[in-house]
Image 1 (cartoon, rainbow, N blue to C red):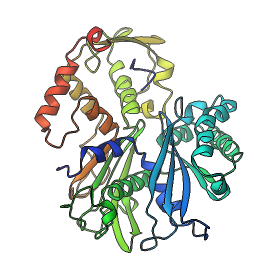
Image 2: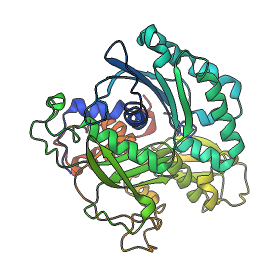
Image 3: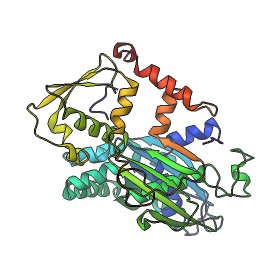
Image 4: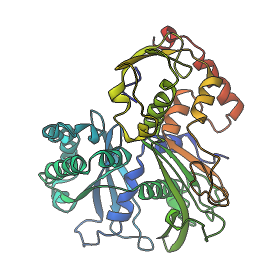
Length: 398
């Protein structure tokens, strides 16, 4: 979280890991909402699409192209350009709506140069907002609507075929992540040479599960062994490239990296007797002042809210890996389960099936530690992270 910080088998190559790390989950909206629906005949055999992924901590713009001819009624989409919008997520503009136009301008102007002018009027543009805006909507539906309306007004001024701006559900976010992973890894193409460079030995009859860690939520999606699930709201069905897929998906709102940290701080400050919080999840020597009003601003900390005898407190890092891990585990209720099997907080989870690919913040953390190699063991990863956590802040910050 910007406000708080100053700062099993992998069968794909490092290049694919990089793609997964820097490709947004919402990119697959092009595949579904655009690649399938845009069927108008064109003088050329290439079509374009623009997707903005409005996450909780930042917004990314992606430009895609695909041939007019489709394979089994689904387009083959390629990313041709990416632009990171400068600034935080769009939910942070709820009190400064007049700045949204400038916020999106640089990346939107870039699309004019990348996409041929003759294609502008038929190029669809779509914005999908995720958990940051879902949280804002929980705080104030009126504020969330105003942000989306401001985005719509801005995007409608460009010479493209504006398709809409919406807050997608957690279920949709998980589903799009699963499709993106399996699309990039070629799981949907059993005999296509288009993905032959990824892995010649890949079993295309199997799909990969998807793990997505964002700033405000985290998603898990996979194909369970049994299509019959105890929790129908966690079940989705797709038909892609001529084949039906039945998946389990759930989005854990408030368990993205930023909101989970807010939860942890709200939980721990309850037992503090003064204005300081000795926190093992920050490096020794790290200090940061936090306003209590900011701590309780998010809906994710409401269950921990209580009247404190101070308006602000100071985090004092102690840098202890084991104690930090134990503190974080206290955020997960694994005791109450109304189903035969649960993940945590009473959410149904069928038996885990197959191999998984982890991306977004999972990738960024592992990449920071140079742990994206195929042959890194869990023990080595834990050792590296433990050693990093034990370093004093003055060394880390330099």
